Amino acid sequence: VYNLASGRWYSYDELLLSIRSLIPSITVKQRNIHHGAFLKLRGPLSIHRAKNDLGFEPKYSLEEGISDYMNWIQQQENTQVQEVLSNV
Image (cartoon, rainbow, N blue to C red; front, side, top):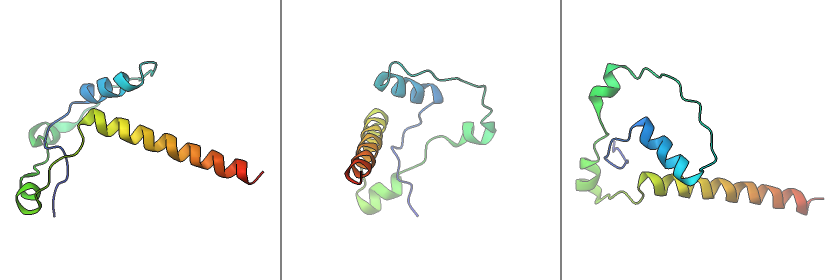
């Protein structure tokens, strides 16, 4: 079993900043979320074994991954709209 991640810890605030940089008009309601001591002590998932055994290197930064995912969602929505329109 391998962890496929960036190997870097991202805070909730960093995630929100990344999303806001891509969608400046977004409004996010923040709640106080208790993550528990386990998550604070755990840290980022290690990708050491995947790097050593498979030569794995992360392809995307957090921002690039969010942007790519948003583009994929938009493509899916456009495809669905095209399918609906072609059946009219």
